[in-house]
Length: 98
Image: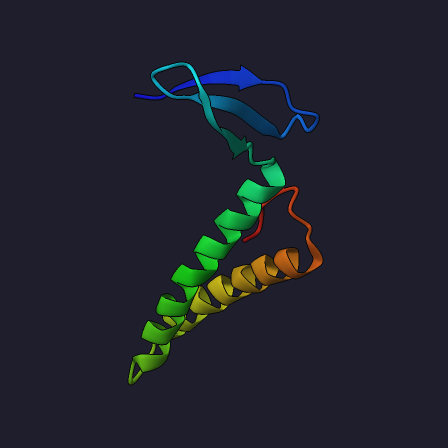
């Protein structure tokens, strides 16, 4: 069984531990990146865009659509476009409007 002892890190976004074996000998260092809000927002936007691919394909596969369906789809495509713009320009302070 291994144990971990906390270490200090120069970067506050990284947690570090010394990994010890049963005899108390160091066998490695474990690090964990603490995600920033921007990292979380980017991951959220990527997830939404992956879902959008399936939704767009389903909409395009319909033989006919109603005006209401087209209006709703246009709103979703506009939100998807906003998500892409935020990712491309790295404007990741929020996911509003996506």
